[in-house]
Image 1 (spheres, rainbow, N blue to C red):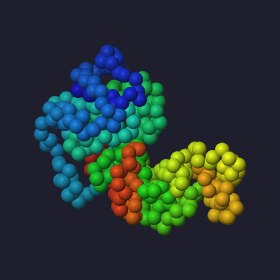
Image 2: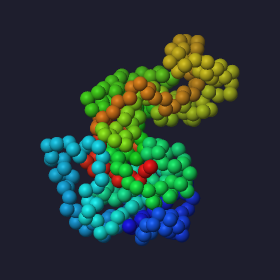
Image 3: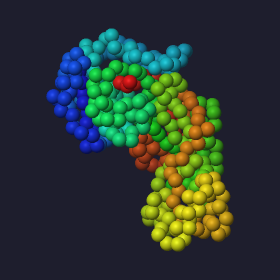
Length: 340
């Protein structure tokens, strides 16, 4: 086996060759080990060695191409995730272990997906709080996660991507560019998750977009509505942002606003914010970000969204410009991820 360990940034302790050799010896596995120190979110130029390693192990891919798979009349390739069909043709196994954030893993998966090297095995040692790590049930302790990533077995999962060719490792969000209520629609397969005309005055409870995560099985995507702001954005006259923790202010008005918000549900607080007196007190009170409507859960193979100014964020990395439309869908190849 050829083992490439990618330490992305400094969020996790350094892994030494001796530590890796000990884990491999304990598991009875031989491997050529390389350790690469990369940026927190690796640039494409930093990941060129992945293409070289893949080309060395699989000079020519004899299996059906992506175009040939897409042309098939059946949809078997979008059913339960499968092992890579290239496995019998490899001169040796290739395993890529990523240490870092969901954004780091997304960058690596995006490179592998665009080069059509998703037959390679992938291990992940997640930094604290990563969605991908929780979704795959990975150990929270770095030492245990390293051991699993190096010596564990592959259990394939779907790969979710955008129409711009960005792979989703842990989660993605669709929201209004300025952080207010969403104007637009979000559809999961043929189910309408969101169809809404946003009201900029709504802050505490409304329709603010959607959050999606990759599933570990078919159909591939799970999504829910966001009922509070997803992004932190400045309010008029508020350089810190209306959703910042200190936005309520230390004065009497701010304390009363916080007291009102803490005494009622977000739904009631929103109603009170629309009344003259209580609305004045709540005008600069911070909102709770990231609240989701669990009852709105929808699953599917694809999500399409449209609106005048959409903010699209993948694994914490926001698209540089507002979009009018975006599609997330299941890729034709599955991810050969190491997980319990």
